Each structure stands twice: as structure tokens, then as C-alpha cells.
Length: 311
Image 1 (tube, rainbow, N blue to C red):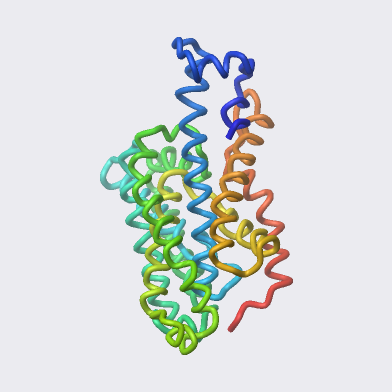
Image 2 (image 1 turned 45 degrees about the vertical axis):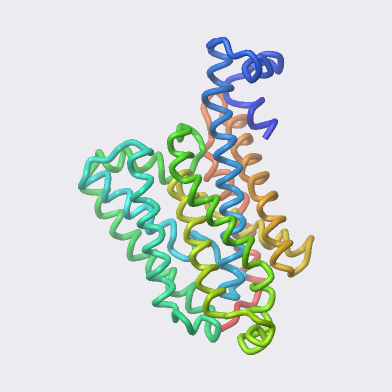
């Protein structure tokens, strides 16, 4: 967080950074720190935590180690909804299309959940990944068709589609904050129940948990977190995939520790990627989604080759 506030495409002396935070004078340096870097840092913390915890929930819900918001169609649903809002309704501002993104992301995940088996996910978790791929491909085709025939929508959409924390502003943050906070609270409330669910439905019931309620709560929390994060910052991939695996290596398989660690590690990864993009792209910026993809794609290939996904 300190690096995110202090470093950027515009060099600002550390003394001016501190002055901008403690004694705002409206100078160009103060505007860069207080009005641009501080909001994107705050957004990065919440979006990163949401993506990390959503990845934990999706992997626990599906028993699929490759599950994350992008794989399960959430990003494609948000993109399709945003393109529709831009092209058919003339919505252009991030504060305006964030609601469409959340509706599209939530609807896509619900469709994937139903096509992947609904209540029978425990028997065939890999079906969710297959359903997510199919739904994502269909929605991506729709999105491509719309932007090909509407150049104005394409110009607006491409800035969201790359995935970034820049130029989102506090209005976008306040719109998604209730969903992100609610999703994090829901996730925290079912940590012990997720541990019992991993033992099987019968064992879970014998320990006092209701598997159907636990799965429904986990799905609701995952949708709120991934949809809110995607609506605010765009489709930033691989954070929800990489961080839970790193957490599992460090803290073990206890879902309570996994989610707690991911809620701290994922924002760190996202902010490091954001700062790296600002510094490497000077005098411009390299978008956050590009940096996370460069790190995450090799990891995803490694996981596909090494991990055995239950059939």
C-alpha cells in the first residue's frame, strides 16, 4: 500500500507524498497522490481480497484446483453485460455500467452452476469447469459480435476489458464496496463448515452442517466477490487462481486460514502488479491485468500439467 501511494508513472518526491496526505494544497503532486493513487490503492486492496477469497471459495465449492472467476464464466458474463449496456443503452461511465457488470457476472455464474450439475457438483466437480468454458465461449462470441459492429462500444469497452485499477475513482468503489464487504463476511462465516464439507456430505451432516446451505452460501459469497471485483476493475485474471495455491502451500488445507491468508496475499499481489505496471510503463502505464497475466499464465500451465482434477 505504501509503494502504491508513493510510486507511479509520475515521479513524486517522498516529502511531497507525505505532504499530500497530511496537508493537501491542491498542487499537481497532491492531486496525483490524494485523488489518483489513494483511491486506486484502496480499490486494489478490496478487489484483491475479493479475488483471492473468491478463488478459495470456488475451489472448495467445486473441488477443482483450477477454479477461479475467469475459468467459471464470471468475466465473460460481466463483459457481455457491459457491452450490451454500452451499445444498446449508451452507458459509458464506469459508475454507470458497474451494475450491469455485476448482473452479468452473477447471471453467468448461476448459469454455469446449473449447467455444471447444480446440487450434484459434489459428484462431478470437473463439470463446472467444462460448463464455465462453454458459457464463457458463448458470451465471448456475443461480446465480439457486438463490438465488431459498434466501433464506439469497442473503443469504450477495450479500456475496461484489459483489467486495471486506474481511472475507476471513489464513486465506483462505493458502489461495489457493500457487495465486496458482504461477500467477505459471508465467506468468513462458513470457514469451519467448508472444512467439514470436504469430509463428505454424510460426515458434514453428522458434525452439524447442512451441505446444501453451505454450498449455497459459498456460491452467493463467491458471486458477490467475483462480480463486484470484476465490475470495478475489469477481468483481472489468475489472482484468484494463484493466491489460494500459494496459501495452501504455506498454511495448509484449513479453509479458515486459506481465506485469511488469501485476503492479505491477493491484495499484495495485485498492488505489486499495479505498481510494476506504472513503473515499467513510464511515462505511461502497463495495465494491471497485463502484468498479472504475464505472471499467472505460466502458473496456470504448470497447474494444468501437474494437478489432477477430479472427474
